Length: 61
Image (cartoon, rainbow, N blue to C red; front, top):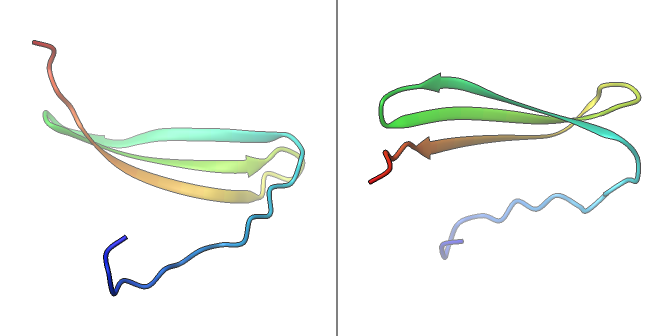
């Protein structure tokens, strides 16, 4: 983390139980892919966490 940037930390509340992870590719180009994911509590499908990612696509040599 860079100096001067605010730190946003959520409390650790890891609850035991069953979860469902769902990930999707939102958009894919020749060089980049944009993705997002959600973590759901199995019992009520409540969203527990979300994530996004931008990925560089590299062809094998």
